Image (cartoon, rainbow, N blue to C red):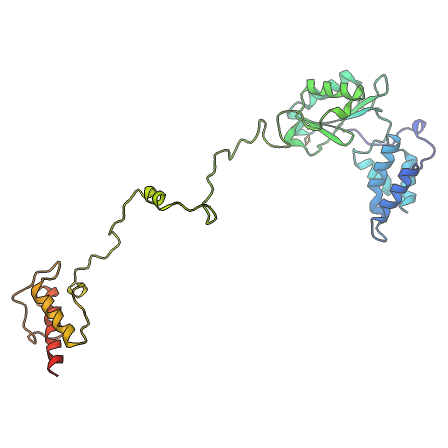
Length: 312
Ligand code: FES
C-alpha cells in the first residue's frame, strides 16, 4: 500500500469548478441533508469531482471544502483516506486496483500484479505509453470470498486468473470495458460456491398441509400397513364389565334380568364357583377368601340386593 499524497504541483490545475450539470446535481445533493449537516455531502461531491476531471485535484478539494463550509484539512483527510479517490492522474480508460490483502494474495494476487506490470507499467500509478492505463495495489475491497479480484472504476472483477485479467485489460484498452460483465469471472453466482450450490441439494419433501388434497378412503386404506389392533384396549374381565349386566340395577325387572344372565351364562374369563359364599355369609366390602374367584361375588351380591329391593 502506497502513501497517499496529493500529486506534485506541476500537474495540479489552478482552479476547479463543477460544470453546469454537476453544479445543479451538487446543489440538489447538498439539499438532501438536514440543516447543519451539509458536510455529510463531502464524499459524493468529491466523487463527482473525480468523475468530472478523472482524479481529485487540490483545487477540487478546496472547492468542495468551500462549498460545504469545511476546513481544507477535513476534506483532505477524506480524500486521502479512501483509495477510491485518485490523487494524481491515472489511465484515461482504466485504472486497475489490484487487491493485495491476504485472501487475494493467497489466491494469486501477485500473478495479477505481474500481469499489470507486464501490460501497463512496472511501477504502480505510472501510465502506460498511451496514457490510457495505470494500476496500483490496494487493501481488501470486501470481496475476499471471490479472491483474487480487481477494481476498475466502480466495478469489481472477481475470481480472476492472469489470463482473464489480460483479457479484461485488453477490453478496456480497446474502449470496450463496458462489454465485460463485472463480478465473478467463473461459474459462480455472486458469492455462492463454484459450480452452483453444494449443500442442501437433497429433495426436501414438504410437510402435508390441510390445503393439500386429502387421500381417498382407498388410498388411506392402502397406506395403512398395520391393521387395527386391540392393543390399546384394557384386558378387563371383571364381571361388572360384562356387557350382559345392566348394572347398576335400579328396577326389579332389570335386577331379575341380571340375575338370570348371571345364572344361565358364566361370565367371560371367570369360572362360576359353586362354592361361592352364600349371600350374607361374607362381610360386605371385605376381601374375598383365599382361592375364591372375585368375579362371582358381584352377581351374587346383585341378586341379594335386588331381592331386597323387590321385597320392599
Ligand atoms: S482480500 Fe482481496 S477483497 Fe478482501
